[in-house]
Length: 249
Image (cartoon, one colour):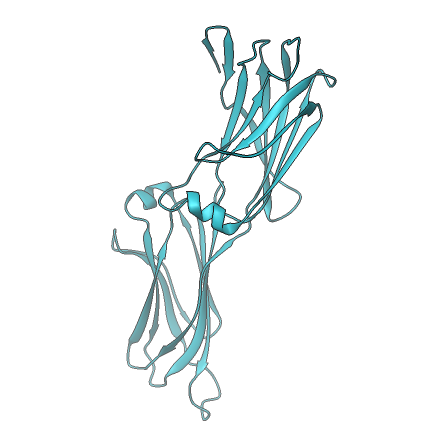
């Protein structure tokens, strides 16, 4: 897709394919790009980041001795990293969890990689491939201990989900009584208060695990989900619950 403004040729996001990276905690995106000989000619690829890790940007183009600018731009418009050089060009940036959270406080933020044809003294048309590797390690949203009395006593843990992805809830516990040899079963559920919907529910002995894919339609109805643990037995239990989130990039 091309848009001409004066002599500048702007090439917008043109994804070729999405593929899993070799590492299980990252994803690779590849794009073809083409730039005109104008100094304002630019290619821009946007993506989202929810995890700490390393962003790796690799660019190769058909004129290896011809220089280009590559920049990684934060959602607020500031540059996180920048390099100028001949193809192939590699750029890396380590993003901390606090920085990812800063821009995703209310909704997913867009990061950008920009390639600009402004480094050469005598410019010409150039085309090539851009490869982005971004971290996708599951985030721990909650990791806490709990105590439940018997007779239907329950505890609810609110979780905020701002983007589509998979929520995984893991719970383990034991009876709070030396005389009890085996922990009684609990009921673990994941619920969406905004829609009165129970995503998943299981009753079983420790350990217990449930998973649910949260969609964009779910988030439009509310970003808050609730993890609920209920003890319908006579014996008090103590345990630990962990909630992790893997974004669907």
